Image (cartoon, rainbow, N blue to C red; front, side, top):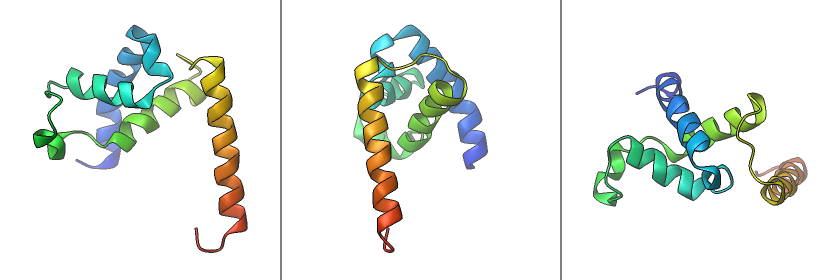
Length: 98
């Protein structure tokens, strides 16, 4: 499945999980687990190649929270995420190898 198709398929599911489970707004691991289960997979890594990309799930979460402005994480998590974003920006700006 190409990236655009996968994103369009996964985003509504991510939005639903974020709407229904407040804790998933602040925990990507829980979000991934709930999305994979919503897609009908047992949480069994024998099926891992059939799972949607975890990166696609978290990108959908970021789009829904940051672009669409919905289902924000709690304030403490938002602060930690912002600090980490800035740290990664600094790493990228200061390193020619990253």
